[in-house]
Image 1: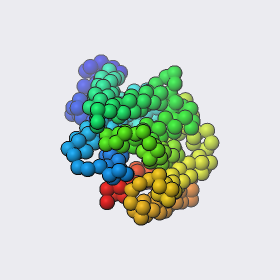
Image 2: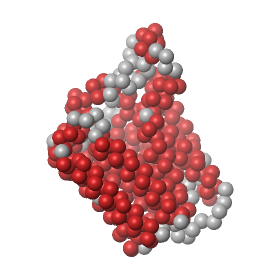
Image 3: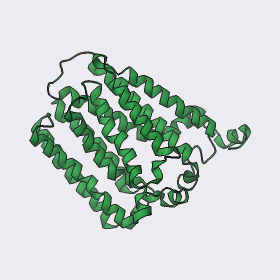
Length: 315
């Protein structure tokens, strides 16, 4: 990565904390923090509804901070092992632009993982450490995603699975664990909704990265199946998970406000159909635009769904 003087020249006026913040990709930290908070809010309103106590604020606050820190650690680790890919796809990032050394990136990643695990240990309602063990599992999966010899990022659908499980399923269950025990179907059903969404929606970031991913040996769905077919393959993930909200409310698996859950299901299903329309009307544009509009809509859908669940359970 060059000498210290060369890195200082490349860094310019940027400070090391500023580069660490850039490495963490701060925009992407909002979704896990909100997801954890939404999971906690859902648990508060789920049957039997929780009576007010101070730890209903304390543990979710610690947990949402943990979720953001863990995601920052995962982002840093991914960029360390994606250096050659990012040199093609994202050359302005701190590592490929040589504004940050690999050594400093490793320090940040390891420290962030350690902080996330410590914070998770302190999320212990009723003395339970369920959140900690969920975070241990999520940490291991993020390592499998980025680090050889596993590096599931290069293995087609397995890349999607190792994104969907920690950032969809386990995130919601971890949020629930900051209030109630996870020994029941409801938190896992909610987690499955978000996991199935991310199973397909996470591919929206891969279309514009095909050149660098191919050079780096990462066989993402667009590379394996082509842009058009991959777009059709992921389309059900924008609709089917949200139909599960309606089914869960009808069957009593979801114990939030019935009418609000049905309204959320209808809203998110319609939103998902709209995003599918944007993707499928001209799928070739997915590989041309640096961040296709469907990528931004993926995050917006996550935000709306997270807030919708919180509202449906708290009101």
